[in-house]
Image (cartoon, rainbow, N blue to C red; front, side):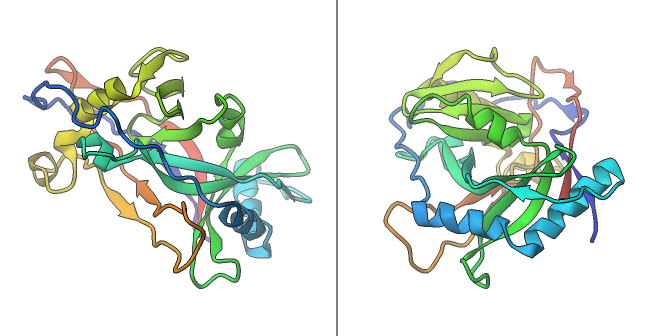
Length: 262
């Protein structure tokens, strides 16, 4: 099984000459995210308990410690992980800030090492979900414990940023390239303006992407054929986007989190 390293953010990004013109956000009253159903979360956890998923976890532990991890224990809690929604970036009316990326489940080796199993819808899997990759560490579990009641965990992958996303706004929990102070609350309309200025002119089909810039690419996961109301078509933003600051150059710090692909 191949092993690759996931790296968030781009290096040595060329600043863009002109950013999006300033103006009030059209999506100040963006609608709330639709959480996965309890059945979907349970199916994702079940997928993380399969022999196939555990074999991925073993490979991840071996590449980090170069030793047999021993017995692996899989947690019983599924953590919905959302990612920044391109429609929110472009101020599409009613677009939520985040779209479901995966459901994360923590795996623990006998040594105490942690890894995160990420499950997504899979029509060919018995439970309708399967684990597509495994990441070292348990950031999702740790950060979800810091969420306010009613909030969800939002990832802004371009800066490897993790947020507490509530109906009223976001609170930055951690980031490789912080755009606001950690722990500071940002109203949802203000956050929309921030991400619009950072990424709206770097979406697929933009001049920035056509001229070789690192695009803001989205792959939409398939929605299950049937399911309870409220299930969400999941989205995944997979590549970093350069941020233009001050008309100069910005070198983004590379961060590493080992990943074992499917």
